[in-house]
Length: 243
Image (cartoon, rainbow, N blue to C red):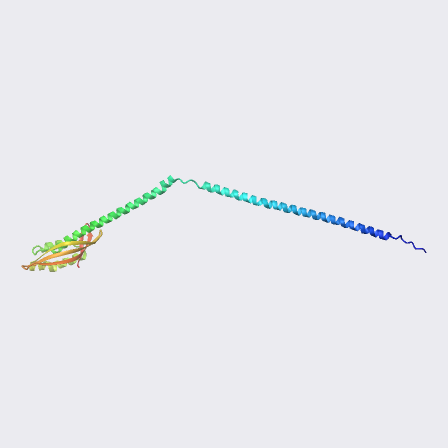
């Protein structure tokens, strides 16, 4: 039985062919992979470029929007800022205010002037009344003592009037008649201490000469603080305190 042998080199040739075919397949795979990678890279670059372009456009659009809003606000403020009509401000605001201030000032000065004038009048009248009434209260003669001192009582008011009435009726009038006492009072000086329309105080300096019967006259000097109240249109003595 004879054996058939394949020629040498047949297996090796096939293997070689197979080996040759394998590199070609690998190259094609690599080329395809490279192409896909390149396409992906290009796509990624295009996407990034588009995003950058959009990002670059957005600030410009935002800036334009902000500028537009600022312009609108400026125009609105400009519309609200109307020109001031100074003539109307003066006519309806400043001048009436000045007139009111002047009227108030005039009223105050008039009140002050009237108050000063009233106080001055009260001072003059009260001083003169204090002098005249003091002389009337302290001057009398034995024959006319009743009439003189009762007339003087009408120059007084309040509790002092009651005290004076009791004094003249109980002491002075009976003593003057019995002992033939006469008295003459003078007021060399008087000064206003205080004065207002209703009450005044006056310091009165009094000299009194008294004669008892046939005796020599005696002189006395004193000072009295006289209080006066305005009753109706008259100043009447309400206090008579020696000092």
